[in-house]
Image 1 (cartoon, rainbow over the protein chains, first blue to last red):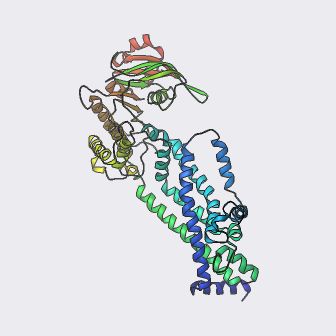
Image 2 (cartoon, rainbow over the protein chains, first blue to last red):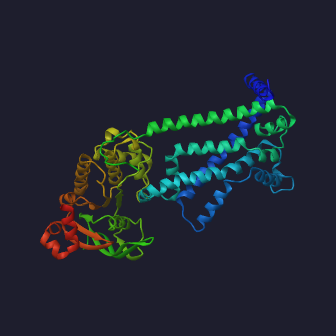
Image 3 (cartoon, rainbow over the protein chains, first blue to last red):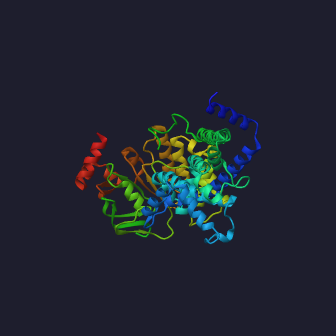
Length: 247
Length: 242
């Protein structure tokens, strides 16, 4: 048996035997990314929806900046958060360095632009087509942004998955601000990097498998939710009374 | 004219590079049924949007009598993924001039649904309704706001003949108004000259953003008179009828 297949078998054994060392890291990873994504989702959806309906001087520049942040390097975020949270930094008084909170903050900063930019795009498409109707009913920009975001909630589920994928798979930022401390701030990606460098390939592979499985499961769940939602909200075929396609 | 609801005084509207309206002057009185006719791009929708305050005039002014309430129906109404009842209730609740709470809005919404014969689908998702039902739902949403002026942008375009007929009947019923002393003013854009003949009291013909004819319906459909008043409108009507 070669090294790869050997490692895969050992990794599978670790996963199926619920190895405590592996599952502690998995649980922590999920907790960090889920917390960061929930916070980022709340902020990003509100901000993105507002950007979609509001018009102000310099909006174009804001959008260019926002789209640039989509490609924000995670090590850069890690470095900035490190400087902010270090003892002499402006947020040093929080004492968050090398903690769960530090990792959440880093992932939050990484994910907010993703949620904001994608939400803005989704809501703006609807606003262009139908925003005037809601404005004519008396909905101001804030109300309109909330209504249209709520109406596009199925599309925004996919935005959530994209954000979670970005958060859980990044390694640079959590490595810098978390420190990869065993039993404290070690998460899946930092553990994979460490175990690979140590030559413990089965554990690294096992973690990689779990990471993939988590993302796969989440995608499947969201795809199922979307399908359920679309079936529930779908217009009946050959709807009576309408000639031609609906927008 | 004491019962004038809206006055347009030499209104011009520029939309990007296109001049949508050119020096349009009109008066809409209480109880009038004004049909806006003209080819695509003639300015009908722009005129409705200007009357409703969605597009500000670049020149001239739109004067609306204080206290006059308006509602507008779009060609393709947008319904949220909510029940039909909640879609209408939301329209009422958003009306800042009345500031009703949600419960009162729902009561009015239910009455409006009954008015358009959609009470049986009140709990169904607004998006699941057929095109004709959605248009009736949009009419209910507009009617629930108890407007004095109802603006409709090609309300029966892209509907099948049966659904068209249903909307026309509702339009005719709405015109009667909630009370004889409070007649509803109806202003709508239409390509359907038969519908215009059946429902309108006055016809405004637009071409390239200009009003080229503004006549009582009987005069508009009198070929000799129309040819004298506005050869362009006459040519349009002949083209549509041929």
